[in-house]
Structure formats: structure tokens, C-alpha cells
Length: 78
Length: 78
Length: 139
Length: 139
Image: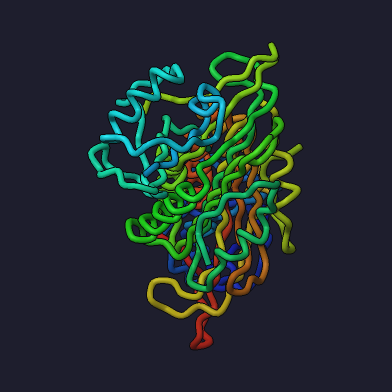
């Protein structure tokens, strides 16, 4: 019963890894709140989008066993 | 005592030549009015710009011996 | 080096684009006009472009100098073909580099609009019917 | 064939432009983003672009499909680099062909604006001081 969390850009630098496997959380918001404390992420959740299994998702999307979660900091391509 | 008149696009087709040498006219407007009758130009002077010696000129610009005059029909480059 | 040129033969874009490069430029907008197979509902087979070359070159240059003044851009250039062109041929190219994309786009569009309305170049279309027509659009 | 792509190595524009050609297209607008030697008043020595590739590709494709619906255009494509880039390197290319120039310009600009705001790609700047910084601009 776990999920994979992907880190990009400043979140990856802060986490010190590309991804990690974690127990299934109660919600996406609860997961990010925990991770923010643990990794010292500077960005509040309000500045992020979230993606589940490779597609943008609402913050209240269900989190199920085996899913892949990515927190998307403000983008800066172009 | 003559001027050179250059013809482009539909004016050239109607005149049947690229240019011709003509006596110095009283004015650019008088010259075009004469040519319009002689060559059957469809375009009235109001639709044209005029250039003297390679630069756009007002219709009341002086016409002097040896100058080169071009009547510029509406352009369609691009 | 001149910013505007008339080309009587097909021309390559790559060396023109090279000239726009600059370390301070983060954006490049370009425009190409191609010969289209139709116009105003008529099937077009090809075009002939004629210019009053001396005046086209000086007026084209003036447009590009004006663009350099009007917009916050690094570099700008334009080349216009004359002669016989077939469907798909490149008729005109405009390129603009700038620090930021807003001025690059705005200047590129302004230049092609001005070239189309001010530079003494005329288009004769050749139609599928065999007829040809000089285009003298209302300003 | 996909309209949007991530390129992990330098890419050529010429074959991308070729794909936009169409007999009914009279206009082609394109945009290039280049690595600039400064940003927000700091001297920049180079960039690193990272993407969430799967999502970047699907979101990029969605933007180009939306552009095809929103604007009267013939074809549209975009390629974005990732990895280490030096000053002057091509970071992103957008090309749009259309019957007329208005929609070509409008769509080209809309696409680059949407790519910059929606596609999960991040830029890390490397400054003359040796410092580096991820850019996470306010939306």
C-alpha cells in the first residue's frame, strides 16, 4: 500500500531525490503538508498544481494504492 | 527639355512599354491626365502615388528637365 | 549592411536568421509569406512580382529603420522576392530579434503590414483559367 | 504525427518548418526562444531546463490541439529543449501556417504564451557569480 511521489526543480533539490515511495496518504493536501515539513519546501501548496498518474488533477482527487503523484511548482519554460 | 516616365504593373501593360520620354509637363497631375487619356489607364490619379527621381513626392512637386517620374498604382507585395 | 533587400532569385532563410542572433536577444519572431493556391475564391497557379526596385529598396529600408525606433528590438530584416513564383514558393521573409517576445511579435507584424501597404511591389496572379490579373487593392 | 515534442539535444528548425508547408497556406509565423545573457538584471551564463516529460508532452499536445480549434490555421508545431543550454542556444520553437497572416501571428503568440504558463518545464539559471536558481515565477 504505497504511492510514488515525483520531485522536480526546486522541490527535487530540497528533497534531495527524484522520487520516493511513501504510504498511501489521507489526501494530496495532507501529503504535501507532511512533505513540506520534512523536506523544508519553500513553496506553499497554493502555488502548486498537482498531477496524478501523469495528468493534472484537483487537490481533492482520491489517492489510491500504486498511484504516481507529482507536485508541480510554477513552471518556467520558454 | 524632357522627362522620363516609368510604368509599372497594370500601367505598364496598358502603356505597352516600361518607360517613355516626354516633353516637360506643366505639372504631375496634368501629365497623368494626358497619359490616362492616351493609354487608357483605368486608375484615377486619386488612387496613385507619384515618385520623382526615386523618391515619393507630393502631386504638386515641381517637374524639371531631366527628371524621372513614376506613377505608383496601389501596391500588392507580401 | 542593409536590413531590406529585393531578391530576384529564391533565397535561403538560414543566413538571414543568423544575422539576427545576439547574446542579449531572448526572442525571435519571423514571418514568411508563401504563394497560396487560391485568392478571393479563384484558383491561383502562380504569381509574378514586379518592383520599382530603387524605391522599393529605399522604402523597405525606411520601414525597418522605423521599426528599430518604434519597438524595443535588437535586430530586424526583410527580404522580398520578385519574378515568377510557383505555389509554395517563399515570397517574403521578415525576422525580428528582441530581448523579450512582445516587441519581437509586435515589430514583426508591423513590418509585414507596412511592407504590404507601402513598398512598390506588385503582384500579378495567374489563374487556373489562364487569365492573369495585376492586384491593385484599395488602401 | 505529434505536434509538440521535447528535445533533449539541439534540434534543426528546417525540417520542422517543412512540415508546415501546404498549398493553401499563404502565411507562416514562427517564434524562437533563445538563451539570453541576462535576466532580471543578473548576468546569466547558461540554463538548465528540466521537464516532467510525460505530462509536458501531453499538455503541450493539448495546447496545440486547442490552437487548431481556436484559430483559422493550417498547421502548428512546437519543440522545447531540455538539458544544459548555453547563451544563444535555441530553447523553444513554435511554427504556425495559415491561409492569412492574422491567424498565423495570433496563434503563434498564443501557443508560446500557453506553453510558458502551462507546460511542466522548469528553468535553472546559472549566474556569472556561480550561483544557480530555479525560476518559479508567480502565475
